[in-house]
Amino acid sequence: MELAADWRSGAVGRLAKQAKRTARQAQPQVKRAVAGSVLGAYQRIQRQLPVDQELAVFGAYWGRVPCCNPAAIDAALRRLAPQIRSVWVVENKRRAEVPKGLTVVGPGSRGYREAISRARYFVNNVNFPDGAPKRPGTVHLQTHHGTPIKKMGLDLQEYPAAAGGLDFPKLLERVDRWDYSLSSNRYSTLIWERVYPSSFRTLEYGYPRNDVFYSATAEDVAAARAELGIRPGQTALLYAPTLRDYRATYRPQLDLARLARRLGPDFVLLNRGHYLYDKDSAFGTGGSGSVLDVSRHPSVERLALAADALVTDYSSLMFDYANLDRPIVVFADDWEVYRQTRGVYLDLFSGRPGEAPGPAVRTEAELAELFRSGEWDSAAAAGLRGAFRERFCAFDDGQAAERVVRTVFLGEREPLPFKPLAERTPARGPERAGRERPSGVTVGRASGPPPVP
Image (cartoon, rainbow, N blue to C red; front, side, top):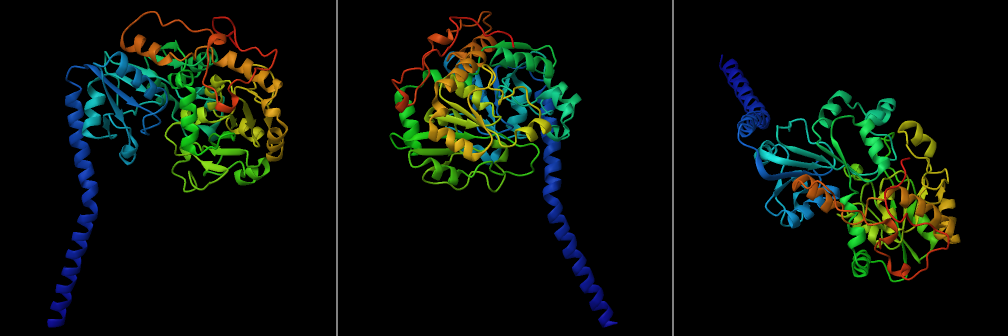
């Protein structure tokens, strides 16, 4: 009997310990459920209060650090309408990277729920979550985050590998929140209005993130290069490939160390991985000497200012970089696969003016020879770049952010006039200063937008 009693006592003890352990394990889930319920109720109460006419919520790339078009608009807003307060939605793990002076709320937090319930203005380069429904009297500005080469929006219905299970009816519901859609060029306007059909107003104002390419001085360019350790006289190549939807993990398209050896010590390669790979263990690691990994650098615009040329594949960075009127080289070893799995709007290998930004190659050997021979900076390359810039950069004149603020926040009816392309002076790399433009290269019309493609 004593043994039985001891066994029962021990069993009860074990069950009690197991119950305590289970309770401890369940406690965070219970806490989250209770917190979510309380915060949901708080949000519903906040939505009953008046809209705050002087509050704006900003976001970029699904809660990443303030950057891109929203950041440039926020900076102009603080200068032109300082009475409007800005709040940025940033993931908690990234808050330490946020520049000082900005107000930040974490997704789902009490501050976040209050901001999305009360703010009048919403600015993002992607969609705000479904848990932030639009209130009457609020204004949503979709800035986008690039001129599209790859298929977007409803066009992805034909490319399931790239769509990744995207709920298209839900997408259209989010698009219906937009009051304004910012366009960097007429080409983008035609695509955005077709693949995101709704009643928004298109603002053909250029991209605010590109304003810096016209305001930066020679000293700014020199400082950007010095920060990266680029030696005087070196040619800096910014290598910025885009995401591969058909791959599950990050894999370099180039052996950069080998390419650096082929090019020699007069070249330095700046490797900029796509931000959607930032959770991959191989992202943003390695590189020294002639290869610098700048994947985690906070400003791609500053990297562009530092670079003498851009090497990319299907990245929209080529349209932004074209504002600098510096060489652009396309390296795409998987062109056919990418076209079939993602779909493209432009044939970058066509060699046609207004479609190809510069020379295009498919192998590392061809890329190395392009730079060793000087063809990357030839008159033919400059001719393609000039036509590309004329078609896609007509609205980028350094005043895009101010145009947006004056229209969206200040209610002005007429945007600032556009400076003719031929009269703009973008920031130049030090070693390119004073170099004569190849004869016969067209840099832009006297005025007005490009022809409708």
